[in-house]
Length: 159
View 1 (tube, rainbow, N blue to C red):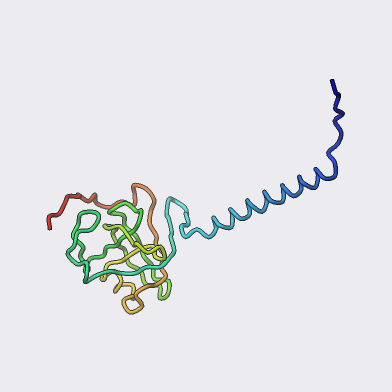
View 2 (tube, rainbow, N blue to C red):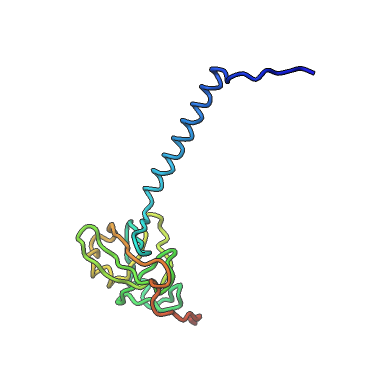
């Protein structure tokens, strides 16, 4: 049987350990940096804030069925969001002029990754974005049961 004598790590092993520790540290700093770039920011009490671009839709879709089953009304204060529950009340602030509007989520979208919300034409008027078409906004809403407004009955609409 061969006996192996255990000794202190060689200089080469120590260098490899330092390199590994450095790489792990850089990885965690990168993860923290990316997390800081997230458009969703949680504030106290379950309140959520999300920043991004908003657009609006109107004439072409007026009267059509939305994902919630409601008919789209371009004159109502409604919006489309990818993930928020239908009925959620969202305060939308135009970051260019500070104007705000409260909208109800009743549709899915936007389907462009560069935007976070699609507003009805009336909501877009309220925050002064009709001419620009797309503006930077901040969304504010409560995460959980408190954010959900009146429950929307969904039923298929015949064409």
